[in-house]
Amino acid sequence: MDESTRAGQVSRREVLKKGLVGAAGLTVLPAVLAACSSSAATAAAPSGNVSGNLTGTLKIGSNHSDPSEATGMTAINAAFAAATGLTPTMNTVDHNTFQDQINNYLLGTPDDAFTWFSGFRMRFFADKSLATNIDDVWSAVSSNFTSAFATAVTGNDSHIYGIPVDYYPWCVFYRKSLFSDKGYTVPSTWADFITLCKKMQTDGLTPIAFSDKDGWPAMGTFDILNLRLNGYDFHVGLMTGANKWTDPKVTAVFQQWAQLIPFYTSGFAGLTWQQACDTLVSKKAGLFFLGLFMTGEVATVDKTAVADIDFFPFPFLGNSYDAEAALDAPIDIWMLSAKSPSLTADLINAKAYMNFWAKGSTQVLMYKANNGFIPTANDADSSTYDVLTKKAVSIVSAAKKITQFMDRDTRPDFAGANGMQSFLLSFLGNPTQDLAALQASIQAFWDALPAYVVAPVPTPAPTAS
View: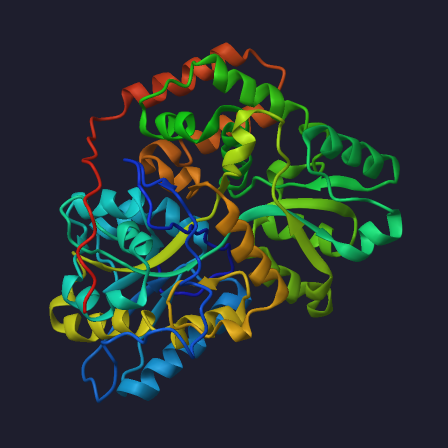
């Protein structure tokens, strides 16, 4: 990965609560966020404080390349420098490049610390001995997190490999003023959703802003449709290989999805998510299904429009799985690499940086730059949360089942550009194709992958007293 800062995409995150986590890092029982939404006045502070003078160097790899996120990283690194006297050297790479090249990055000459995802994706690289455990850091800061977040950063070997720093839900976004002007109402059922899309189309709007140049946005729609149609347990099994992609239940997902494609943005395969988002901001599109981080792009295009943004959970389908109220709500983390040539010399500094990210005051700096990044730390000052954040916390708390996101709930070599990204783009380009053949190709791709056995997720280590 080169040292230059490039324009790019945003990461995705998930929240858990005291839950059971499946082999692929999916999670249950999200009633979590009491701790996440507590105020700084009542929450406990982490026991491991960062202060004093550090010497030497610290190299960090970041995928926070969007303008608002870059602003947050600048503020955080400046605060770290003020507290320790050490300014990190930051290598910023756009999200897609970072994710697509993560294997080569970690096998080559990675930075000391790097941004990544919790659950399966974290454990995958820990199992491959490409990450360094931070048990000692966690013992100092674990009291500042719920047990669910502890589970999210616990490896298959029971060691801790990350600091959870933020999460966000995937929902359907819209502009309140557009709905008011047009007399639209928020749909709660699939039939209402389709009726609304048809009305928007009649009114000359693109009903659903959609893009898939980046590869991953389409995964969110597959996830939510599979959860709505087939339920959490089937989705878990599909992501881990226990269920087959040739199952008729998967066919039903593609058939349901095909009903939405006529309402998508023209030329979506060549558009980034930011470009799709911009059509929502300009009121050329009526709806946009993405993560809460999209508010950062809204603010970049038109800061005044942020107050006009609202959202709702993806519509329910009127079946037994409605009660699950499931959704993707991923968690982002910071990790330490194992093969960084400078990590031995920088280890004290790198662990101090991990400790610094465990503080609510640090995480709030990113939240202030981009309100789509909801802090995970118990001592984060929730009095600064805006209306959208409070609503996001409420929606996630109401969900009975929560997943992270396809590209972090399953094997990296299955979810990547040569795998599901490509298969989903093929479907979107020709939704009337032979689905049985497509599904057989997906299953064949999975079956051809080298063996990789994921051990049961251990119980998190007790929090520090």
